[in-house]
Image 1 (tube, rainbow, N blue to C red):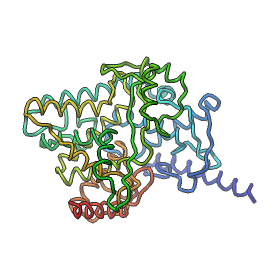
Image 2: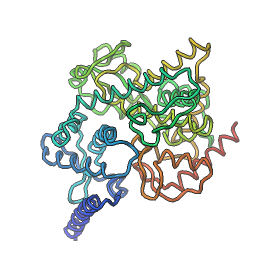
Image 3: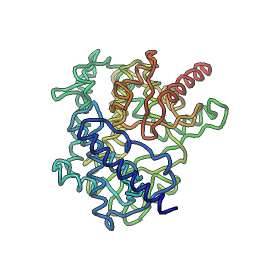
Image 4: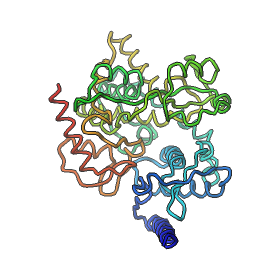
Length: 426
C-alpha cells in the first residue's frame, strides 16, 4: 500500500512539473510551485549542494526559469537580479522547484547566493555573483542621488532616463509629492529597526486584544567572512542572540561595528535574531502608510522596501543596512535644513504597532519586493496596486497572496478589522 502511495506521489509531482513546462511554453500562468506546500510543512529532506551538485544545479535552473515565467511589472534586467535572491530562499527552505519526484521538498542547507549565481551564470553570464552585487549597489546609489537631486522640489519623478525606479513599470512617467514620498521611505526604513521595535513594545505593552505585545526582530551586522565561517554559528536568523553574545562576537572580530564602508568578499552581511517571534507584515505596513500619508507615501515605502531587498547582497555596504542608512540621511537632512526630523518616533512606533503580525487579528502575510510587483492569478494588477484599490473601496476579487497563498478576502477583511480596532484605540 505504501509503495502505491509513493508511486502516486511520484507520478503527481512529475505531472505537475510537466504541466508547468507546457503552460510556460504556451504562455499560460501556472502558480503551482509559487507558494507553500500545505501538506508538506513537516516533511522534507536535507541535502547538500556538494554531495548533490547535479540535483542542485537542475533545481536552480528550473526554479529560476519558472519564476521568470510568472507575470511581473518589472523590466527583465531588474527581475533577473531580484529572482536570484528568491531562488536562494527557496533552495534553503525546500520551496518551489526544490522538490523531488516523490513530492518531498529538498532543503539545501548549504546553499548560498554565490552558489546560485554560479549555476545561473552558465546560461546568463551577467548573473555572476560579483556583477549582480555591483548592479544592486548601482541601483541603490542611483536612487539616493535621484532623491537628493529633487529634494527641494514639490514633486519627485519616480523614473530616470532608463525607466521607473528599480525597473518598476508602473512607476514610468509617474511623480509623487516629495514630502509624503520621503515620509514613506523613512517609515519603511525604520519599521524593521530592532531598537524601534523594542520601544514599541515598551510604549504599548498590550496588543489590540489585551494580550502582551510580542514583536520579534533582529539586526543585520557586517561580518568578517572568514571568521564568521570558522566560528560556525549556523543559521543566525534562528534562536536568539543576547547583547553579551553580540559583544563577544565583536571582540572576536566576527562582527564589525565601525561606521565605515566594507567590501565583499572580505566582508559580508548577516542577520542575527535578537528576539524570537513574528515581525511586521510589509503588506499591512504599506496599507497603513497609504491610509495615513496617501498613495505617494505608500510608493515611498515600497521603494525603500526595494532598497531593503537589494541590500542583502552587495559589493559595498555599511553597518545598519542601506535602508537604515538612507532613512538616517533623510532624517538628518531635515533636522539640519528645516529644524525637525521628517518623521517622529511616535509615527514610527504607531506604524510598527499597527503592522506587527501578532496583533489582532493576526496576519500571516508579508510580501517580498518581487511579490509586490507580481500580478497573481485572479488579480488584474500587481499586489501593491491591489492593496491601494482595496483602500479606495473597490470590491476585491478572490486571489492568493504571498508565499503562504493567503486568501485575499481573508486578508482584506483582517485589514479592515485592524483599522477598525486602531480607530477605536485612537
